[in-house]
Image 1 (cartoon, rainbow, N blue to C red):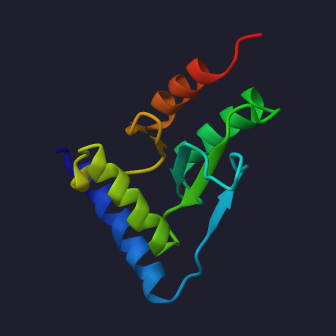
Image 2: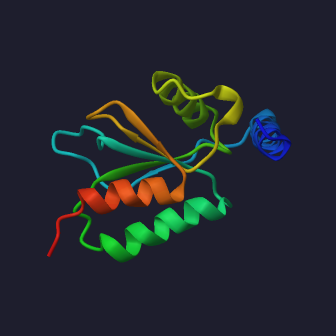
Length: 131
């Protein structure tokens, strides 16, 4: 693994640990719920100041304005609970725990993870109904 990725991963986890240690509040926002109170089958794990996460959010805003795709969003940098969930999903996808980052999209229907802005955008683009 290249040193820059190692450093980025270490910084990500150190920043998260620092925030958790000072008692940060759990932050989770959901765009919508699926009938009967069930969670969306798509979960977007993101960080508040992550530029790649903002690219995905902008794509969703511009390409799914009617909310045809239901996505639960979980901020992982300031929420231990969300970070634990993120790590659990990454492990289920057999992702390298030393090379994790956001954004990551979990597709519960297929038990798959999609990493990185362009991969997520490509996945969502295929999911959106064509006009």
